[in-house]
Length: 309
Image (cartoon, rainbow, N blue to C red; front, side, top):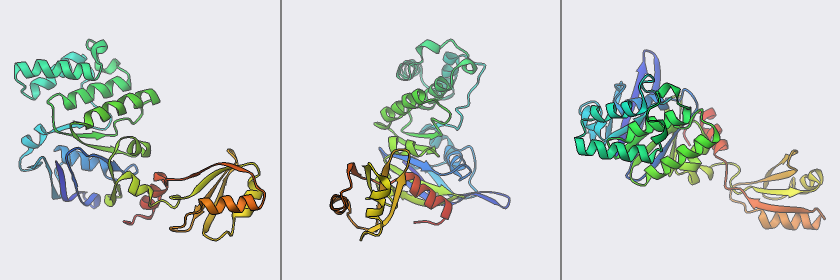
C-alpha cells in the first residue's frame, strides 16, 4: 500500500532523511517513531507529495508520488502536523470545499459528507469558524477532510500532539475504528501512541532508519524484558538479599513506591529463584510480576546510540 526505496531528502549539506526503505501492507497501522527533528515529518511530506525527494522513490497504492502524483494523492488521506486548515471558514463550508476539490460526484459528495460528519461527531460545530474550535475539534475536522474521499491509506502526522487526555482518547478511538478498513501510518514521538495503536513500528533518528519491528518485538530488546517487579516492605534488606544472586544483572529500587526491579542476565528466568531467595532470608514481598520490557528504554538506546540494532 505504501512503499519507499532509498528515500532521501537533503537541504544543502543537511540530510534530513537518509536512504529510508520500508513497506506498509494492507491493514497495518505503522508507527513512525523518532525524537523531534528525526526526519519523520519530512518523510511524511514526501509520501504526501508536498516535498520532492532528493533521491530514491515513494509510492502509494502502486502510484509513484513524483511520476503519478494525482493518482497517489487520490489514494491517500493526509493529516499534517498541527492539523492546518482555513481558520476563517466554517466547518461545513470547509468540508464542502474539500469535497469539491476531490471532484466527488453529487451523490457521493452528499453521502460522504454525511458519513464523516456523523463519524467524527461534528454536527454541533458545523456552523462554527474553524479558528474558534478546540484543538480536539480541529483535529476532528482535519481528520474528516483527510478521509472525505474515502482513501485506502492514511498518513497522520502527530495526530494527538498537544491534546488533553480526553481528547487523546477520542482521537485514538477514531483511529482504531478507521484502521479496520485502511492502511495507516502515524508519525509520532509519543511512545504510548505506538503501544495503544500500532501493529508495527519504525524508529528513526538523524534521518536514518534504526529499527523496524512489532511493538512486542521492540519491547523484547529492552534490558527490562523478563525483569521481576515486586513490592517489598524493607527495600534495603530485600535488595541486599538479591544483589549478587546468580542470574541477576542489577537490582533497582523505586523509593516512592517501595518496589524493586530485578533485572536478569540475558535469557534467565528469575521469578521462582527470587521467591525462594527472599523466603529463605525471611523477607516479605508481594505482587511479583514479570515485565514485558519498556519501549522508552529501547527508544533511548536506539536514538542516543544512533546505531541500528
